[in-house]
Image (tube, rainbow, N blue to C red):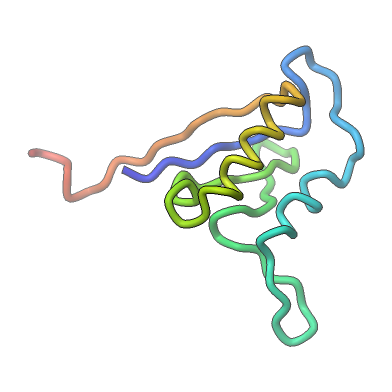
Length: 96
């Protein structure tokens, strides 16, 4: 089962987290440059969710890059950021 964490730019108390570009900064830690263009990793990237910019972290990052996973989750927890875990059902598991 694949899960993703949707990390919002707000604390659990409802305050907007600063600096406002923190999502891009964190996501760029795993980004690469291809033909003079920044390409975000599918495991850690910014994305619009319900009209707001969020950081998306794929749970596969925990096995593929444990250090980065621990860094991001530590950042989320130490800054008390809102996050939601969303898991998808794999079609092959349906009806089993």
